[in-house]
Length: 186
Image (cartoon, rainbow, N blue to C red; front, side, top):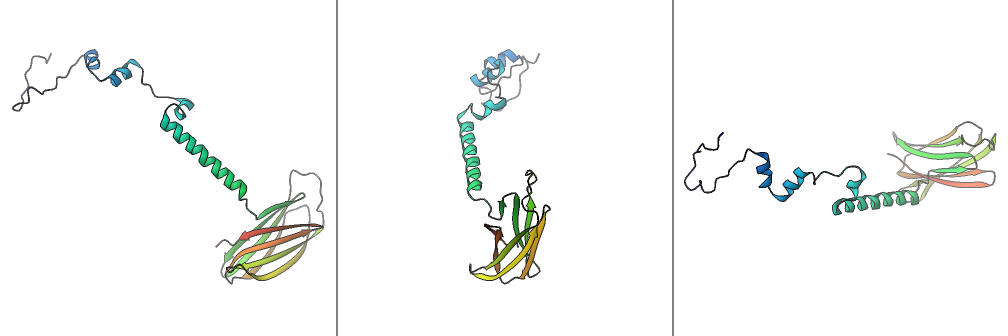
């Protein structure tokens, strides 16, 4: 239709003119090899889990991701928080936070819901709180004696803040003794 129409060109541009072909097969036949492969169906994108290992860059990303996840998992398993422990069928958690020039400390004692035997019914517990200041020296000690039951029990204390950064708690039940450490949340 427009094949015989002459277009206007600048000087010397007629030799370098681009000829547009309206026929799709002619355009694809003169196209580069990767375009021809795409139209023949050879360059379809990968789907599913194949995208993680089909080419070299994706394999590199997958291996890096696996190393990163393994590192985080190992780091978390080796550096467990020392503010929780389990003594027979009771869980203990130590928390300390700063509020208005005071440090509030809570030791939560909660029975294991999966355990059917009741060991700590009216059992005496002694907790010794050790307040550590920013020089890593003992600032003050406080002892509290309570009795445990089958329900959740909170043992609380507070102290005026004199640059206390850490609270340690030594829990003594019968012959068992455990130590918990909690850094003060500010």
